[in-house]
Length: 287
Ligand code: NAP
Image (cartoon, protein in one colour):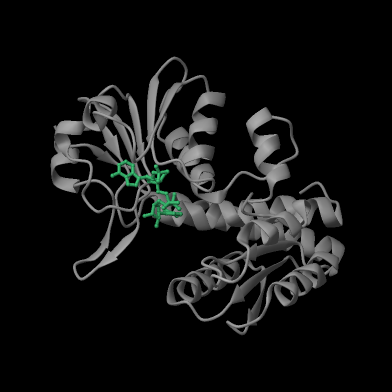
């Protein structure tokens, strides 16, 4: 068997075309340009690379991208005051704070201060709590939201199925587990202290991996016919690597997301979908 590869690039492109048309219609009706501001502190290469990717994505949907680059030695008060200015700016509809922040900046304090209505990556505790309770409105972190969309488009059935999510970060693993739970999967969350991880993984009809260890999951961790979602994004000398060993997993899985070209492109599209929600609630409009 060779798994069906779920093409996140193609789906992302289609979604971004739809979003572009909607943004254009609303912008023409309101005269207000949809705007995403990105706050970056210091010049960490991963954060800078992500900022460039977000800029390209904004361009692809016709949204304005406003970068705010603060010097790496900006103190906590300086970061918070820059964030407050973006919170107050009615021309800014979505805000992303890029990680990693320098060590002297308290990330949680920054997330707590972000305007929940502009929090397009769902990192504010209010959005995380509302997601957990399924009490809209809330923003879902873009990466798990994109993975769910990819699975839904592929016709994956959720109800009653066993799902295992390896990884429990606030931005990928935990929200992915909640989204699966809300779709009536029976969900196990695994992590670095899980014992007999390959056995736990093999129980999954839907196996999601968000760890950051290239080729950790091999074919013998996968139940035959399972759906495998690989969130892993690790840059190595051989290029971008996921958390699954692609050849052996593809021999066993029924469907899998490739790296690159699976969950990554979907993240960008869902970020823009969240920006549309934030923009709509700021400017009004049906579109
Ligand atoms: P993270 O915050 O570092 O979390 C990693 C998780 O993996 C932790 O929960 C950790 O467990 C678990 N883990 C570490 N070693 C393990 C092991 N040997 N066995 C089982 N679990 C283990 O990472 P993240 O932000 O969730 O990101 C995870 C991966 O997704 C990274 O490669 C990242 O680059 C990628 N990512 C991709 C996208 C995308 O758009 N595709 C977006 C965001 C992130 P403990 O909690 O016990 O430490």
